Image 1 (cartoon, rainbow, N blue to C red):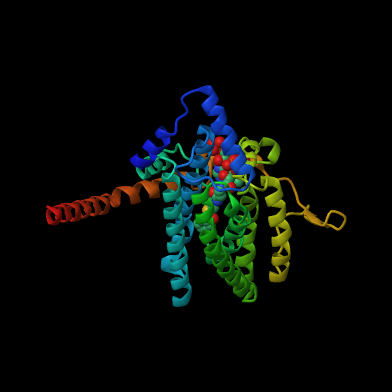
Image 2 (image 1 turned 180 degrees about the vertical axis):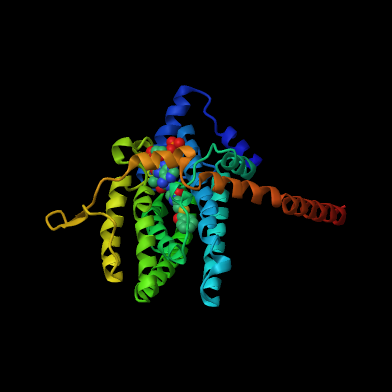
Length: 331
Ligand code: BYC
């Protein structure tokens, strides 16, 4: 981390002309679809935007372990339990890759975690909703991972190399997660009337929050203009949301479930589904920390961090012992 910070300092421009030359070179590389790598010069705002987005994404993976983790001890069969443990573990892994990608930009893991725990950093709005039934685990895999893939496939072509490469692996795993969620929904939808009701209830709870995952409408998106120019974001919030609806509605029909939107209808002329108004006030409330489970989620992360202090200390002590032994051998 310190070495990267020094590298960044080493490439600081010494005059306005130097700075302009660096900006032009950076923009030409982005235009030519060349990846920007950690030691390359980059505008301060490009770096700050990436730290913001990648860390928000990493925090989402880590907080996102909680709603499904809630069901690990209560999964209906041993097979479902094994699959769920593996999925939640994958999410921890995604968080770890993403924290590492953010660290390449000159911020430490400790700073990133502190920003989450003190409430400064955002994480995806979706993880502030409860999972009262087993069907919610299915709906998260189907809808939340489905929305995540829709959003993340274009991020595999993000101009920042470490983020783009992390996304390739994450998307492969997410597509498996999406299928396991859909398979849970299919089993419930083809089950007893009570199981079908559970599946419908979960779709009712997760549909609208899933549409909110894509972020505010384009006209209100503060970062889209700059992020699209820098090829961090390739597709706009509204366009991805529309793709998600077009893709997911036929899947709901196949399940025999009803999307909870009376305004939903197919428009043959546009080749897209029209859908009803999203409650953006609810989204804003969740972002301000007033969602159903914001306080519980942060409390759970703070407790996990405090309870894990001894593990971090032990790992550091072990690393120090190894270093001292290696130094002793070299002497
Ligand atoms: N929730 O200018 P905008 C997963 C914020 S986890 C909260 O459009 P941008 C999974 C935004 O940060 C997948 N905040 O922003 C894990 C900004 O606020 P600040 C999570 C949101 O960045 C476990 C403000 O609103 N995926 O897959 O251009 C189990 C204005 O927005 C949200 C990612 O993180 C939101 N939904 O676009 C299962 C993908 N939306 O920072 C599954 C990576 C917006 O100015 N991130 N905000 O205070 C992105 O692609 C982009 O950051 C977004 C937003 C499309 C989300």
